[in-house]
Amino acid sequence: QVQLVESGGGLVQPGGSLRLSCVASGSIFRINVMGWYRQAPGKERELVATITSRMITNYADSVKGRFTISRDNAKSTVYLQMNSLKPEDTAVYYCNADTVSYDSSWYDSWGQGTQVTVSS
Image (tube, rainbow, N blue to C red; front, side, top):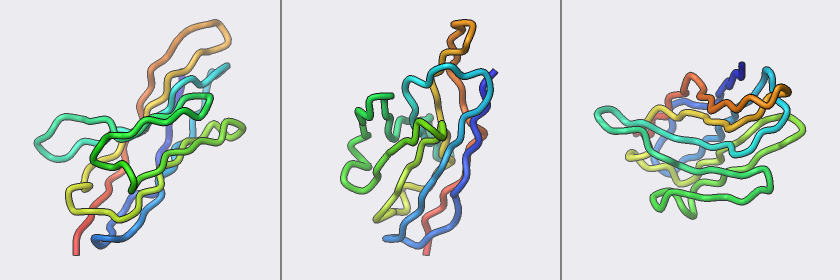
């Protein structure tokens, strides 16, 4: 079992910044890819950014140049620094992790989500 706990969401004005964090815990031998997804009301969940264990990153076109994903492997934590926020960034942001446990089981786990609202 793997648990992901997100933090850092909130209300911010357009042009502002927020930093999301997600800590993974549980039966984890190795964390492969970690990422952030988001879901706005009435829309499907979409990829925001991912980062591999070798720090290779991938971003949605809509956030390139504004968001930065990073991770601290020693702390099993992934971060999302969000700058120049726009109202269209408003969504529930979910953390995702692809992990392998000590018994070689593979898990694709999700956090509970954290609300980000960009509004004046």
